[in-house]
Image 1 (cartoon, rainbow, N blue to C red):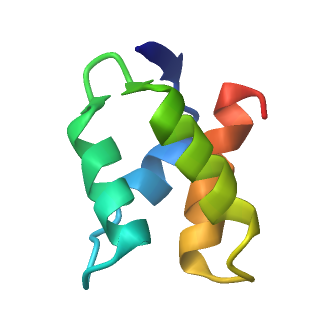
Image 2 (cartoon, rainbow, N blue to C red; image 1 turned 90 degrees about the vertical axis):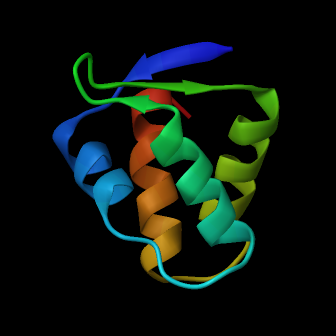
Image 3 (cartoon, rainbow, N blue to C red; image 1 turned 180 degrees about the horizontal axis):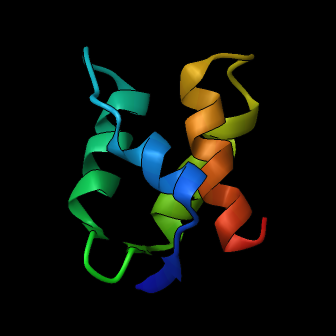
Length: 77
């Protein structure tokens, strides 16, 4: 597992409610569970990172892509 301190934009995007079912939604819910509000850090593994990268680029433009991109910017990708 890795951890990264999130900036306010990424925190705001991660904290938004998630509606519906699907890959994007499931990953966001998983990441929300791995986020520690007190330290403002997100724990993630290689599988999470691969999905975050893929979902931020391969699915066109939209709200989910921007949410993942803001997390990636904190990771340094």
